[in-house]
Amino acid sequence: MRRAALILGLAGALVAPAGLHADQAGDPAAGKAATGLCRTCHGLNGYARIPIAPHIGGEHPSYIRHQLTAFRDGTRVHEIMSVVAAPLSDRQIADLSAWFAAQTFRVALPAGVRPEDAPAACALCHGADGVAVLKDAPNLAGENAIYIDTQLKAFRTGRRVHEIMSPIAAELSDAEIRAAAEWYAAVRLEIDPAP
Image (cartoon, rainbow, N blue to C red; front, side):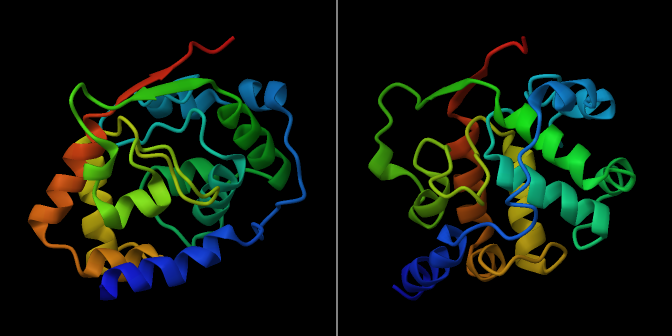
C-alpha cells in the first residue's frame, strides 16, 4: 500500500511539462546525420546492439533529451555516455532526440501472458507492455534483463538517483527486481529499420 501511494503521488511529477529544452524541437534528419557514436551501441534505429545499452528507438523525445543533457552536464554519470554526450550542443541533443523518437516500433506480450500480471510498481509508469505511459519515463519493452536489473539496483543503492525511481527501487527485493527485469525482457520489441 505504501509503495502504491508513493508511486501515485510521485507520478504526478512526470506528468508535468518537461523542463529542459522542452520548447526546442529537433530535426530528425540532422539527428540521423549526428548518430555516429550512437550507432555503435544503440544502432541507427535505436535498437541496442549490446546488452548493456538500452533500446532508444521510439522513446519520447523529452526523455532522450533529458538523459543526454544529464550525461553532458554531469548530473548522470556513465563511463561511456558521459564522454559521448560531453561535446553535444543543445541543438544536437534536440536533433538526436527527434531522430530516435521518430522511429516506429511494435511490442507484444508473450502468448498467454496477461497485462494485469505485470509488475504493478513498474506498469503504472512504464506500461504493462513496456511502452511508457508518461513521456519522461523510458520504454522497457524488450530491454535486456541484465540492463533492467543493473539499473534498478543502481537506483536501490544510490549509484543512480531519481526522485521517483530511487524510493521505489529501495523497497524492491532482488527477487522483485529479477521478476520485473524478466517481465520486460520477455516483451517482443521490433523497431523498424531506419529509413
